Amino acid sequence: MRITFSETRQKELKREYTDSILKTVSAFANYDGGQIVIGVDEANKKIVNVIDYVNLKLKIENKINDTITPRPRYDIKVLSIEEKNLLEIIVYPGINKPYMYKGVAYQRNDTSTIPVDQSSLVELSLKGRNISYDQLEIDEDDLQFTVLEKKLNEVRPVSNFNKDILITLGLFTNNHYNIAAQLIADENKNITFGIDMVRFGHSISEFIDRRTITGKSILSQYDGAIEMFLKHYPEIEKVEGIQRIKKQPIPYEAYREAIANAIAHRNYYISSNIKIEMYNNRIEIMSPGGLPDGVTKENYLKDNLSILRNTIISQVLYTLGIIEKFGTGIRRMNEAYFSYDKKPAFVIKDSFIKVILPNVLFNDVDMNEEKRILNLLDIKVEITRQDVESLLKVNKSKAIEFLNKLITDGLVKSVGTAKNLVYIKK
Image (cartoon, rainbow, N blue to C red; front, side):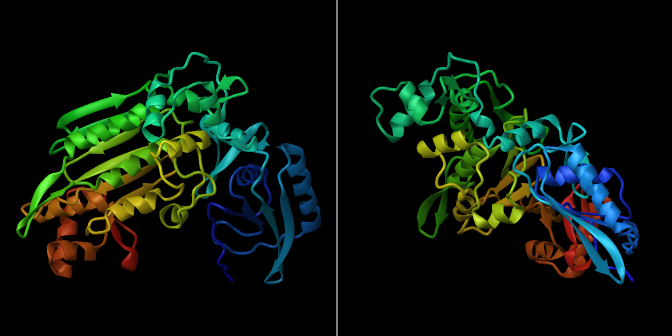
């Protein structure tokens, strides 16, 4: 008889014990915990009886205790199914990270277990110390903060800007500056923690404008990103009835919030710039690093859950009024599009988060059907056949015809089956 066991990011099935299980114990302890079931054939999901489960349980306990440091929290239970015995290892998320097996820390990548990279190891170590990366102290002692002083004076007058203010903001502790201070200072040596902005023309081969800001305060980066937006997406006067109304092609508040979120919550362990790509029909903002540990995609998009990756930077931006109440960024972006049919889209991967803000004034009715479908994919990332029917005002067979043409041309591919079938760009 088959059972419904299936492997996931937090569940691993094993026919029998091998030492590779210890790598998975390390991975589960380092992140969200998980379950390992011994006695299930991974290939056909059939139960295989674990005969000497008493001695095997003892062996596994000794192996975990002797080879994984520090010792993780776990339970091993005997399960009886179909008159056969299995062993279940429940590994709990650890608080003393990183948990290493033979000197190597591991993580889960979908249903496989792999060593963590250097940046992830640093992140785990900081979590084990219960501090964020931006709290780490640095050796530099000659940092200037004229940009910060100006920003502070815009929200509240500061008559005497001195070290006491930096201490209050958390930028100077134990007689040392920290990484947050380095990133907020007028200039810094972190040339890969900047913003790269480009305004494309009718294709990605046509560059209208490009600007890269590195080695400068993240506050200057924020200002530069706003300037680039106002330059290329100015308000446009639209005639509605007998009135002339000014409208922004992309809602300013949504863009501002997306930039603020990217600077506040990006993963600064990753040496990569925030990327802002500006097109006629959209803006894409890509922030290095996926979601923080403990935040799911659903939490991020719907629950306003905020786990601060950069504690001090976020607090400073909040003090300056650049970000609002923690955890409301996505909601505020969506609210900026409330009165429009087009909505923001969010692409969430392990290595980046991308926000796509559609141009609400962009009109493609004079383009051919294939181009209009591709434009829709630009702003929605994935679409259904019904989306095409609605967009082009065509029936089912005609929509399928257009989609199949794009698939044949190598521009689009289908993912999933039946009711779950969607189309994405290749």
